[in-house]
Image (cartoon, rainbow, N blue to C red; front, side, top):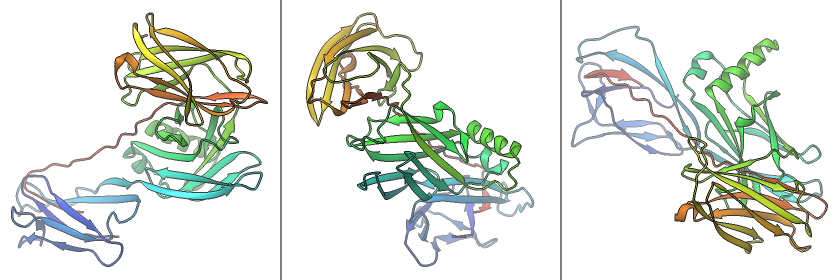
Length: 366
């Protein structure tokens, strides 16, 4: 327990200024009322809390108990405890070995809680890690989403593959739960685990049907896959335009003609966007090797390109200046002499929520 105290909200809203410290005890300053010793703010003296609160990433659990209603002297009992969680994202790095014994740096960004037991199995090409999780119905009902990111260098070709399969506690996740992001970072690929509240309920039911006596933690696994499904889909950062991309032949190899076929859509409705101007750009080794500017009058267009024998490895396919604006998006491509594979990216925005409990002239305990 980090802190426990009474607070008074004359207008139904309590503001607490938090100054995190890495150690020591928690102290509170402000004004106190004479009835319950509840802290309250004034124009000249705000409530300030100093101590190891939000000093490190992870999940912070709040329990809020209402003690008076309407006026400070109207004490009430047994209204139950309201709970909510606040997550401070954590960034953790893990140095792993490839099958050739070379070092590769993986990263995990967790928007829920700290992770542990990270491992990369180079033989099976699987990443795994664990995270604490309370599978109780009460907890799941107030968790809108569990979001985890796996980061690794785009140049790590062994894991830079067309698609991935994900599991939690050995249960296959829906395809929509795993998305690839080659757009947010120039040098890293990001794989997003997005588990909605419905996903969490489904995972709990499957475990219970399997006879799991004690549900605890989440064990994530991410396995490389070479399956390619057309079209690949990417969105602009503001999620206004969706780009569908296919190519022929499926296997992209140097020295062979490749036709890239793309369609522009309204990201919200899925309808094709007519008269969409664009710049189609191919980048390799941070240098532009091809560019085509065009206007997709009926919503779709194509571009032909032949990679030369020296043009293999990680490649970016970028769409810029969409509809004459600064909107853009990007696909990742790996061309290897022995085989070729293209990977798609969906830019995902994770949304956080704020819970506000209002009651005029109320005293409550956090």
